[in-house]
Amino acid sequence: MGFDELNELERKLYEYIKAGDFENRKWNSKEAARHFDVELDKIYGSLSNLSKKIRDNIYIHYRDSGLRISAE
Image 1 (tube, rainbow, N blue to C red):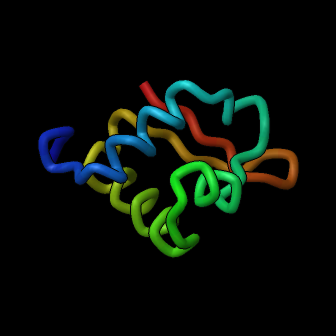
Image 2: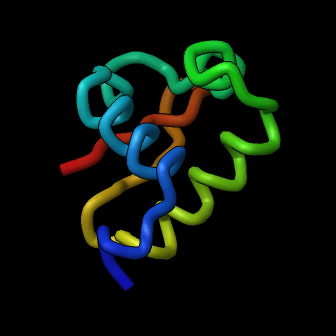
Image 3: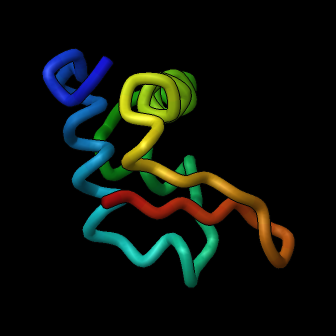
């Protein structure tokens, strides 16, 4: 699996994560859903798919009471 298998929302979400500073500030799924004007479940599903499809390029962990996400 790789970048060529990402759908449009997954690509946009990846770029959003990459441009954001979600390693130093907490990830907010509701904020992402508002940004992309989609339902919260779409963000959850896309984030899950990113962790499967490009698992070597995205890192999700929990720190200081919140999710932290970085992408390269």
